[in-house]
Image 1 (cartoon, rainbow, N blue to C red):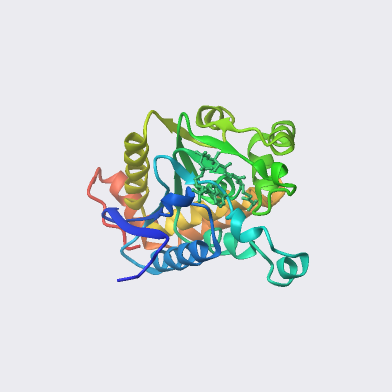
Image 2: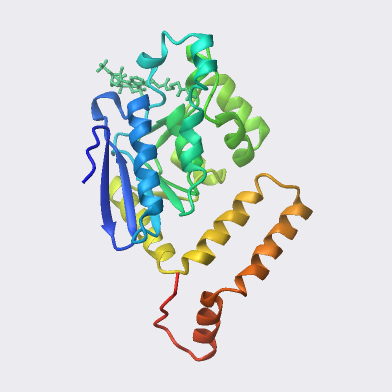
Length: 261
Ligand code: CAA
């Protein structure tokens, strides 16, 4: 058993690990202790062979209202620079082998929006409130917001969001491609996210890992390099048992597939 104070660790279904941010009084503001626990739990789920997909959720009212402003307000340049403030937020989550789904309801502001954008898949409620309001605090996004938001929605929209600090809805996030699906309420959101995690968990983890890796490379590489990278990984999967199992099942009309990974 793990003793976490700022998060909950659950198993909503076979093969699915769920981390729920749980600082309700601070609208899940992302403090250093919260992030340490989040990273610890993510690492444990990634290493646990019984977990095949990971959900990251908040409450109905708030996914996360951003970095903890009260913790940050007296930070100095030298402290921020020497500790590489916020850098550890993204290193664990973006280097996991297993797929992550962020389920966003309520506020996803600043670091909350940035955390949701670090997940492999983002689902949200139609009335979720996203934004990068750092400009109102005299700073800018610091957990990848200016980069991930711009890649997802394009330069003009990202500039508008980051320069005005105005919020946008879950519906808008879906229309712009930042979120892949919206749901009418919190329960529907959690069910939808869990169902998707169950679907992913039913496939070969080797193929899932490879698929996640090549999609992520599309964010880093030029098209021709990315296509070549994909093809190399595709070729490599013909060395796996799961490729034989999957294609044999199709050819022999078998439905009950037992993957080796
Ligand atoms: N940090 C610390 N505490 C926070 C917080 C945050 N980001 N967001 C909310 N809280 C706290 C409030 O201070 C309040 O605590 P008290 O009861 O002790 O006063 C409690 O959570 C409830 O919040 P409100 O009373 O403000 O609730 P509301 O419903 O009136 O407003 C809100 C909700 C619009 C989300 C408002 O809380 C808000 O604007 N929060 C700050 C959002 C923000 O600026 N986020 C960006 C942070 S900077 C960042 O994230 C940097 C980065 O890039 C990593």
